[in-house]
Amino acid sequence: MRPEKHTGLSRLWRYTAGRHGRIAAVMVLAAVSAAAPVVGWHLVGDVVDHGIRAHNQTRLAIDVLAYVGINAAAWLLGSTTWLWLARIGQQVVFEVRRDLFEHLTSLSLRYFSQQKAGWIIARLTSDVDALSDVLNQGLTTLVVNTLTLIAAIGGLFILDWRLGLVALCVTPPGILCTRWFQQTSHVAFTDVRTRIAAVTAQLAESVAGMAVVQAFNRERAFQREFDDLNEANRLANVYAQKLSSVFFPAIELLGIVAQVAVLYAGARLISGGSLQIGTLIAAVGLLNLVFQPLQELSELYGQVQSAAAAMVKISSVLDAEMDITDKPGARPMGRIDGRLQLDRVTFAYGAEPVVHELEIDVPPGGCIALVGESGGGKSTTAKLIARFYDPLTGAVRVDGTDLRDVELRSYRRQLGVVLQDPFLFSGTIADNLRFGRPEATDDEVRDAAAAIGVDRVAARFDEGLDHVVREGGAGLSAGERQLISIARALLADPRILILDEATSNIDRPSEVLIEKAFDRLLSGRTSIIIAHRLATVRRADEILVVEHGRIVQRGSATQLLAQAGPFRRLAETLTGAAAA
Image 1 (tube, helix red, strand yellow):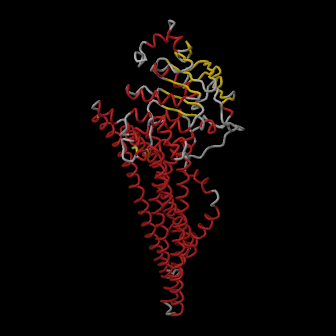
Image 2: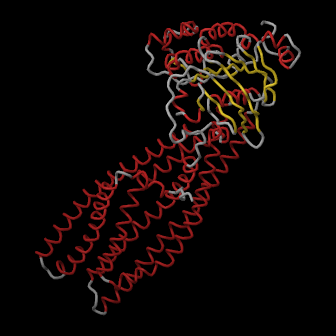
Image 3: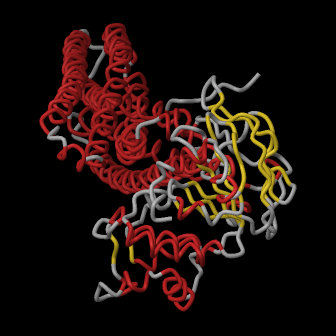
C-alpha cells in the first residue's frame, strides 16, 4: 500500500531537512522572547503593589532596571528570531520553486498536452508567491505570536488563577467561531486559487495567439471572456474577504468581552480584599498580551488558508507521475553507431492505438522518410524514436538496445530534432546555436553557422552572431529561424536526427537554402524525415507511407512513383512536387 501523500502545508516539513538544529535554536530564542513581556507585566504588578504603594524605592529601582533589561533582551532576541525564520522560510520557498520546475521538466509531453500553459505558470508564480508571503513574514508571526499567546495565558494563571478562569469565558465561542472560519475559508481560498489560475491561463493563451486573435477580429470576444474570468476571480476574493470581515471583528469583540469580565471580577476581588490593584493592572496587561497575538494570528489565518490552497495546487504538479523515467539499473549509453529499429511498436494516446505494430529498420547513417496524410501517425512515430513516449507493445531499439534499458539523458544527448516551427530562445544567435552544446567554442559556432548559411542571416545585423534574438525568434523570417535551428542541430553533432516537417512553412527561395543545409546536416547521421515536399523526401534511402498508423507502402522515391499506390496519389498533391 502506497504511503499517503501530503498535499497541504505539512508537506513543507520535508524541506526543513538538515535545518532542525537551527529551527530548534530559533524556537528557544522565540520562547525566551515571548516570555519576556509576560515577565515584564509581572514586574509592573510588583512595582505597583510593592514599590509605589509600599513606598519602597529600592524595590522600585530594581523592578524598573529589570523591566528595562528584560525588554532590551526581548528586542534583541526578537530581531534575531525574525531574521532567522525569514531566512529559513525563503530557503524553503526557493527549494519548492526549484523542485516544481525540475519536476515539470522531467514530465513527458503527455502531461503538457493535457494542461494549459497558463495553469502551469500559475503554479510557479501566484501559488508559490502565496507560499512566499506566509513563509517570509507569516512564519515569524505564527511562531512568535503562538509562543506569546501560550506564555501570556500561562502568566495570567500564575499571576491569579481566578482571573485566568474568568478570561477563559470567551474560549467556547472563540473555538466555534474559529472552527466555522476554518471550514468556510478553506473552500473560499481554494476557489480563489482556481479562479486566478483560470485568469492566468486565459491571459497566457491570448498573448501567445494574439496574431490570430487580431487577424480574425476576435479582440472583443477574448476581452469578454477575460472580463468574465476576471469578474469570477473578483467575486471569489470578495467572498473570501467577507468571511474575514466577520471573523476578525468577532475575535476583537471576544477580547473586549474578556477584558470587561476580568475588570469586573477584579474589582469584586479587590473589594473583598483578596486581590491587589497592581495584580489587576498586570492581569489586564497580560490579557491584552493574549488577544493582541490572537488577533494577529486570526488575521494571518486567511493568509495561511490561501497558502494551504496554493500548496494543494502545487502538490498536484509535484505528484504528477513521470511516465518516462529511467528504470532501476538503466545504464548510460556510449557513443552510438545509429542503427534504429522499431520492433512491432504499438502506441495509443487514449483507448485507440494511433500506430500499429510498426516494423522499421534503419542502418547506421541511413535515412528514411515518413509520408502520409496528417493524423496518420508520422509525428507520433518520431516522438517514440525520441522517447518522448514509450510504446504500449514492442520496442524501440538503438544499436540493438531497448531505449527503456538505458539512461534517457545519455540517449537524448545524441539525438537532434528540427521541428516545423523552430523555437528560438531569448539571447543572441550564437546562444541559440549553442543550445544543444553549451561548451562549443566561438570558432565551432562560426563554422556551424557558415556551413548552414546562418552567417548570411547574421550579416543583416550590426552585431552579427551576437545579435539579440527576441523570444520565439520575433524579427526573423520563418526560413531564417529554421536555418538557425538546423545549425543548432549541426553544432550539437547528434548521431540520430529527426526532421519533423522542417520545410513545410518555408517559401521556395528559403527552401533552396535549407535543402542545401540538409545535405550537410544529414551526412553520416541516421535520419528520419517527415515532410510533405518531394524535394525533401526524395533524398531518403527508403520512403515509408503511413496511413492510420500502419505502413502501407515502402521503397525508394523512384520505385514508389513507378507503381500505382498511395505514394503516387500523394505525390500529386505534395507541396513541391512540380519543382522536384
